[in-house]
Length: 196
Image 1 (spheres, rainbow, N blue to C red):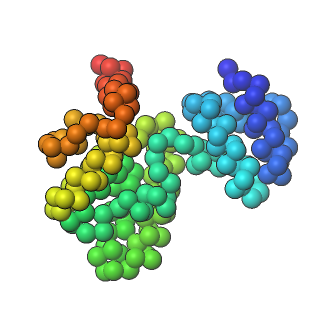
Image 2 (cartoon, rainbow, N blue to C red):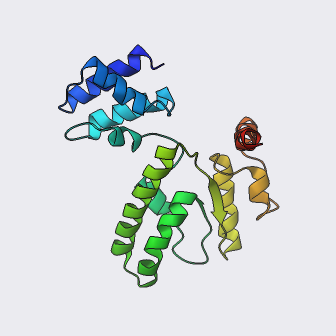
Image 3 (cartoon, helix red, strand yellow):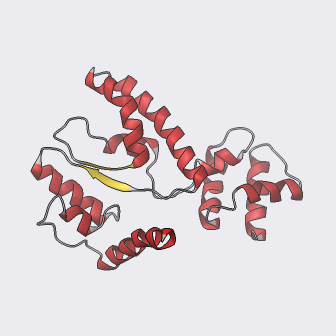
């Protein structure tokens, strides 16, 4: 059951975006968002109040949910531009990269960025709509020195577990925050327990 705070946040955000909801309409709108954590929805509504120009939609809110996946610009910055680069990315980033790769190979970086942006936005929307959690993994480049720093940063950021990173760089040390490593390992194990 959604909280009164969430229903009010939806109503206020909609009003600030030029739309007034009846209480019933606000409840249906909130029901459409019920599969997402309430705190994440409230955060997304805050972003909507600052960013949405025009009528508020469920899609506006879902596209602004913080779910551990990077936004389009950050994702673009994480992509490998050559085979020497190691990158840590999500399934959605990898899939969208496929749209950009032919353009990158032709050195059309503006076109590549636009193709990536469009494909990534669609992949994000689909993943978020289905409630799929982010799946981070590494694409290993040929530059061993850079590989170590990329994987080490990903472990420290909580995107990869130390065990996973050590499969590619055995000499990696633990993350700066051991509690974070345990939390990541527990979160990664949880879907397996549910599927069993």
